Every structure is written in structure tokens, then in C-alpha cells.
Length: 322
Ligand code: NDP
Image (cartoon, rainbow, N blue to C red; front, side, top):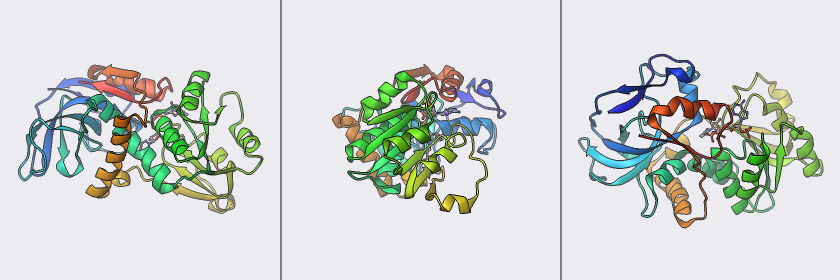
């Protein structure tokens, strides 16, 4: 089968197309024929070596496709089932293995592309808006990278819950997308100081919650946008890890919640996985949640996909097609 293979950590050039044997499912595993692969920032952290993994490896975690074969002991799925997961080991490939406990059925009416575009970023937006800081009518949230994959979904969920969303983005085109997703106000941080704008927009009060996936370049400003006892949710580091900070100074500004980048957020238990993925896949199927998947690349162009994501050239979801 064709797969992307990494032999050393580094820039996008380490992502090379290779011919590898189709993996065999072990006990509790399912082999899927991959039809759409979700590209996520976490795969960039692994490629660079920010997150450690044994090499060589086929990157990836999220995919949708069809069940090809079952390992010993798997009874919940059958060959031909349409499935998706955020635990597809080495999803940048034509075939990949998934633990059966972390696989869900794709509802009728959804394509593999829609399912792959929904799972990881959709469940992330779900836990951020429904669990980490459960938004309600009247709350004000600041969402960084408002036209990104998580950003567009989080903005839609937040505005459906009645919250006022203020977004930050880098370009006017991205501002349009964030507005269309439900942001009440969008700040072009490339032209305006986002802290001053948030203060102006909230009458100096500050926001109830900041959802910050950018990290290094936004962290300090995010703290300064909080209302007293507001919550800063740090769930990513697209611009790099946050610099060391003074906890005493931090505690005078608000509370900090750092999300651990583990699957435990959405797949701690089978029931949680089914509940959260069921919600988001259902909202996409019913049209309540809109996906943006303008960026679809052939598997062989995985390096380009990651380069574009890192260079802020993309909006919404990025997919690879084996
Ligand atoms: P996005 O589509 O949001 O892409 C990243 C965006 O961040 C860019 O488009 C850009 O938007 C903005 N950005 C600002 N500064 C930089 C920079 N220096 N370099 C690159 N991008 C920058 O990506 P995803 O939706 O895939 O992921 C968003 C973040 O959420 C990532 O940090 C990821 O690790 C995290 N995440 C965390 C999860 C968790 O459970 N903890 C799960 C899923 C994602 P603009 O041009 O508007 O500035």
C-alpha cells in the first residue's frame, strides 16, 4: 500500500511517499481502507519532534473509511461498515489500524470526507464549548484563529449556545469566514492590537473565556482580555509553546485551563466517544454544523498540506485523499 513514512524528524520534506505492507489487525483491532484523512496540527508537532514518537513512523490519527478486516475478538463491526475515528494509527496511508473501542459508525448520508473533517476538530470544539467552559446565552468568548479548523466549528457551536463570539484572524478573507460562522466581531490582529480591541468591544469588562490555540504569540494578550475570574483555555500552540510565566501574576488575572493533547478529551470512555462524535456527526448530517473543506490534497502531497497549514494559508479542514 502507499503510505507517508518519516525516517527522521524535521521539516515537511521528511514526509515521503513509500510502499509498505498492509498492516494486519491484532486482537481488538480493525483494519480500515482509508478514504479520507484529516490533517491536524498535532501531526506537525510529531514531525518536528516536539512530541516524541519512535521512528520510522507513518503519521496521522484521524480518518474515515470502510472496514476491511477484523482482528481476533472484534464483534462490534463487520467488513464493509463505514467508520471513522481519531485513533487511526498512521492514517496517512491507504490502509490503517484502529482499536475497535475507538471506532464509530458513520451515519447514513455523510461522506467519508465529511466524517474525517468532523471528528477531531468537531469533538475538540464540542468539549471546549460544552464541557471545559460550558457556554450559555450572555457569555462572551474570544476565539483565536477564528477561521481555522477548530475555530470555525467552535464559533458555530458557541453562537448556537447563545454566546457572543469575538474572533481574531490574520486576513480580511478569514474575517468573512469567521463572521459567516457566527462571530459577532472579528479583530484583524495583523492591523489592530487585539487586547485593546477586546477591551473596547466589552466596555473594558473583558471576556468570560478565551479559547487560545495559538500559544506563544497570544498567551500574554489572552490573559489581559479576561474579565476578573475569567478562564483562559490554552489548548494548542500553533505559534510555539508559551514562554515561562509567573503564576502569581497569572492568578491575579484569571484562571488557566491547559488542555492535555491526549485523546482522553474525547475518548476517555466508549460512551463519551459515542456521545460527542454522535452529536457532531449528527449536527453535520442535519446541516446544523457547516464544514469548510476547501483544502483537499492527494496523499502524496502530505508535505504541501502541512506546509500550508503551518504557513496560515488554510481555512477550515484540510484533508488528504489516498
Ligand atoms: P488551524 O486551522 O486553526 O490553523 C492554525 C491557525 O492558527 C492558522 O491558520 C492561523 O490563523 C493561526 N496562527 C496564528 N499564529 C500562527 C503561527 N505562528 N503559525 C501557524 N498558525 C498560526 O489548525 P487546527 O484547527 O488544526 O488546530 C488549531 C490548534 O488547536 C492547534 O494548535 C492544535 O494543536 C490545537 N488542537 C488541540 C486539540 C486538543 O484537544 N488540545 C485538538 C485539536 C487541535 P490566522 O491566519 O487567522 O492567524
